[in-house]
Length: 150
Figure 1 (cartoon, one colour):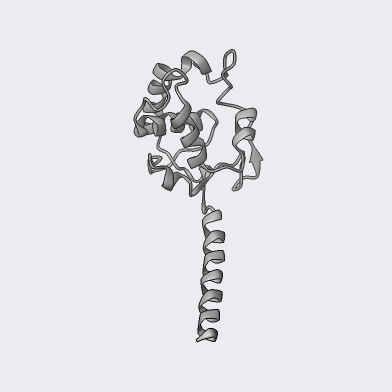
Figure 2: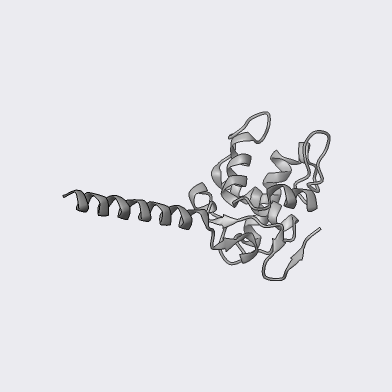
């Protein structure tokens, strides 16, 4: 019985460690076309209505609001997941009324931000669910081309 318990404990530990490793990896990158152009177009209108007053119409930042396009933005979020970025935006913006937009609106705005950073679109819309977005890595450098955007 003791031997069976030890074997089960080892098996559970090995399974847990393997699961942690798999969850920590992301198979998809923003460079794999994770939003559509139509979604980014909707996001542009929503950005103009809810975000441009602080972040600027061209996403270059104004006053204390940071730029949402360019090398600094890409660098700030490099290595995180799209889910982490999405959740940060969703829970803290707009600053005067956080979480006031729908999940779809936040996804559309994020798609617009990606397009504004020359991250290519694709055939499928950016999901509005954090748990799916956490499987997408945000990288400042396109791993397929090896080039960094500025």
